[in-house]
Amino acid sequence: MTERLIGIALLTLTIHAAETLSYAVRMAGIRTGKLAIALSLTGMIVLVARTSNIAQGTMTGKIVDFAKRHAEFDLAGSFRFIIGGASVGTLIAIALFPTFVQLSARMIDHLEKAGSVPGMARNLMRADAIRHSVHHIRRPRLAMVRRFRKGAYPPRLMALNGFVTAVYTVGVLAALYASSLPGPYSIGISQSSGLINGLATILLTVLIDPHVALLTDRALRKEAALASVNQLYGALMLSRLGGTLLAQALFLPAAYWVQWVVPYL
Image (tube, rainbow, N blue to C red; front, side, top):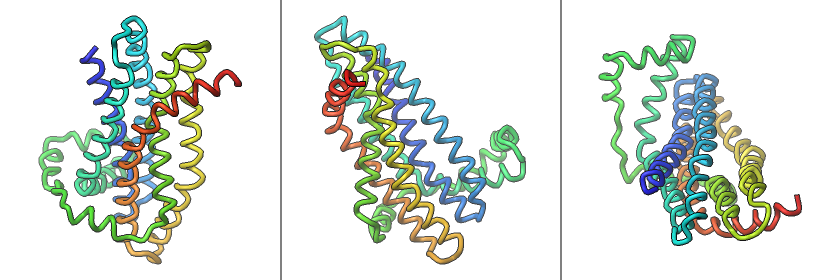
């Protein structure tokens, strides 16, 4: 069971790293003036990450079954370990942000020339392309984080982005943990992660994405400095990191909320 737990934590790490690095793809699209292509790549990255989140739920469900047969197993502690993987993944993505902006610009260029994702993949897998990618590696610096913090952003936007990230992080885990608690409707509760993730998706789409899109459009029209967009994405990544930490506190309340609300559905 330890191996499965580590595997799920690594999958969670990868999911959150990929979603956080989608900001780097958007940034590369703005810098190259090819935002439409960048958004296509971003959509693919997010789609794969969200689909992997379904696999995470299936894999984690087996841990719940194991915990039901072994009362001594610390299910809550195991889930907190998985949530910790989300924080580590986000932190890794922040460190890789400068490098991934450079690599994303190459991906956009290759996609434009190849005209298809399979063609882009073939070009990127060539030996000379792999060797050349080393030149795009950028070492993360503390000054980068300082620049992220200099921008003037609505505190409510950053707080909301952190909260949405926290809700999304605990959605599947809270539903599965709630299904392990004593009481009826355990199957219905285990399928209720959409209640939490749906709320997070609505908040993200209605309240956060439009603000980011407006600033991005201003940057493309040269009405806003490119540095301001870079700082905004940096601040959003830092608030995502804070959200994964907040998820530790929301985990149990979210589980009990799911257990309380499902009987009324």
